[in-house]
Image 1: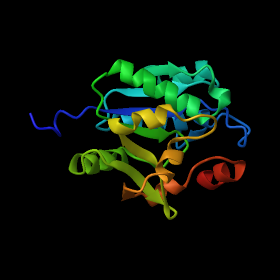
Image 2: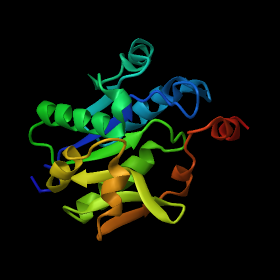
Image 3: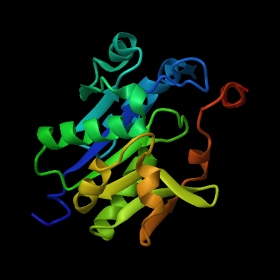
Length: 199
């Protein structure tokens, strides 16, 4: 077995927030017949990520019902109101417990409706060619999520506090392998964003 074949790459979907700027939980917004949560979860499940773990918090029961039939694990973040970092750290701890030999993890959000399984797999493919590199989507002149972090950076991710997410770590790194993903620029944070995707 080659090193690439033995890689264990998990998928982490952050979907615990209350979406205060939007005024409603974004994970339950419908887009093209599916909620954003369901769409993002299916994207990860169909990719090369295994295991897949979803972090839920706000609107837990409705969110759980959206993804409970998929082959993934659910992690509840009771402190979701304290900021994104609490969901990321809770999810990362849970997925490491689920798969102690994890080689890397792909971090995704549910508010980028145009991200596809092909996009996730392109990050994984790049990682297998560039072992131990951080691989991130590039859009709007910067790098961001979805992004793949090797095990060497798990400690840094676990040290995040407050409303800082994976992007905060990416900004502090000099060597990030970027995969062009212009459609990742469209995320849903405000009512105007929602109007844009529905148009």
